[in-house]
Image 1 (cartoon, one colour):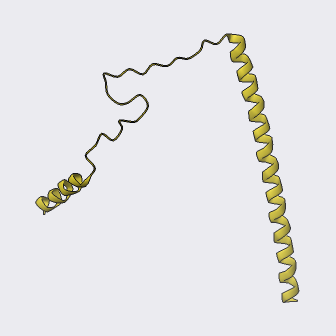
Image 2 (cartoon, rainbow, N blue to C red):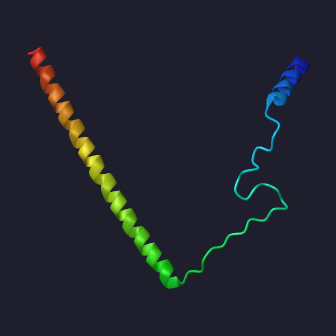
Length: 92
């Protein structure tokens, strides 16, 4: 049985495409390639402004999530109450 399983594994491996799978990946995986980034220098004042802006955006996003959750729960509650009222009428 081991020889059959090895044959199946080798057959499956031979069916795979014979190409360099990650040749188009940014930076690549070859050790002789070196990725260079041209990042601008930022002052501490700029970094503080960026951090402040990100905190404000996070607050606004969290507020939107909370309001949307509350509205959806309210709609779900209304649908539940309406359907229970209908069920009570059917039973009574």
